Image (tube, rainbow, N blue to C red; front, top):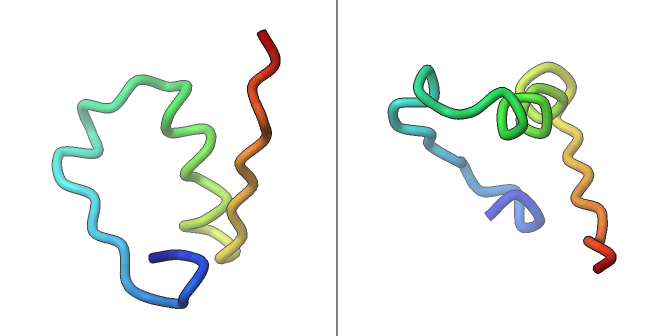
Length: 40
């Protein structure tokens, strides 16, 4: 949705872990979203 410019609705975001909120915060503040790859 974000890549195509569509709205994203977060339900119960106040219950999300801080790790999730730290990823979502830039999207809410400046419309930027970075999703890095996970290395195992």
